[in-house]
Image 1 (tube, rainbow, N blue to C red):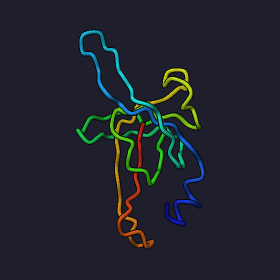
Image 2: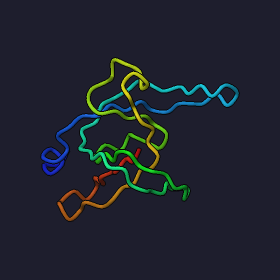
Image 3: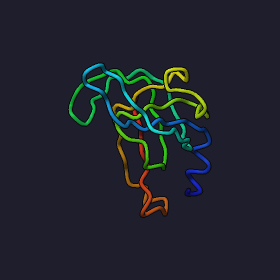
Length: 115
């Protein structure tokens, strides 16, 4: 983790990786949760996902961790001992990355995770 990330990503969030969805009954299966260092903002904004679909974003998380993906669930804090439903987790609807080489991190992009 870069020195800038250590300073700015001072919070923790829990991510439940999306594994599969049973299209017959709608059951979604998630993998073992993990925590990430992050920071977040809670602000309702109009947003478009990578497919161009519009939605109202509830929260945006910023992280250096490349593991969270589209359709994973995320919740603030260390919630690894519970389910996404009990933790109040939200589905990640869009993932964006950007270059931070100007801060001396040429191989480490940062990511925004929009729910």
